[in-house]
Length: 64
Image (tube, rainbow, N blue to C red; front, side):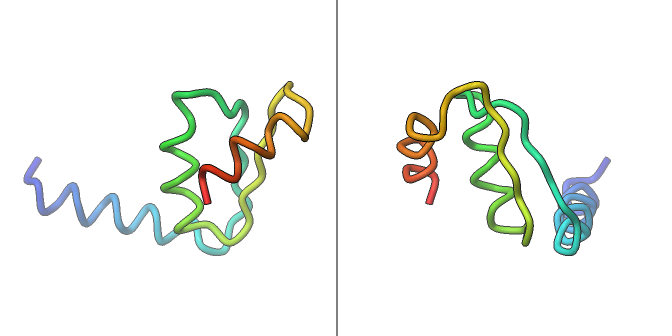
């Protein structure tokens, strides 16, 4: 596929998330970049993790 077409498809998909509820399960190292990207597109983003809220708060502050 052409790069321009992939970029357009990516932007269309990310823009489609604006009015959706999106959840990420697990705030591990591999999901931190995902949360960064999603937080700039999603109006309603929920994070789930087995860590307690105090431990997650430090990681979440780094994302913002």
